[in-house]
Image (cartoon, rainbow, N blue to C red; front, side, top):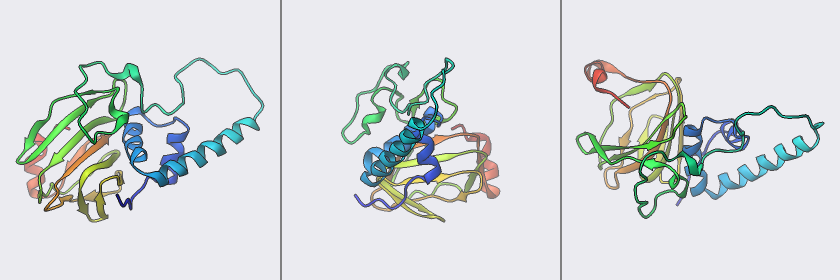
Length: 207
């Protein structure tokens, strides 16, 4: 597996410090599970953060949620957990997975239940050669490719790659014509389809 796209330093530092919304953290964790280089960067960040904490005068902490990375909470699964298929990221094991449901021609979606998360998390599977509508977002759209590949205006993303998009990005993903693509996505805000076709389809979008 050759990985070309990784989380920004800011995103990885927020993950290391447990500062990400759990839905976003799950998608980062899926990438880290697949990428040795990102695991190394994470260990370095955790070591630096640990050293900084050691240098700070200890104070009593107020009660509240843990700031440790929260991408694997055993108590998070509130629905029946689907059997894990071969190649599924281990980080998803504690979470409830919905059934695959068609949302278009040769496109299916599977929800990942993350109670309490602000981000919506789902898996997306698209057949070879599919082009998704040109769109942008009002929030974050973070994606880890699980199998296959897609490409858009910012590059080609294959298995293990992390695609970190926000409100400044708009793109038209095109799925690999041979392999298709399966990915996991965490999304905040809404999808805004572009162009005349997008305006016609916008009322049907329910991610």
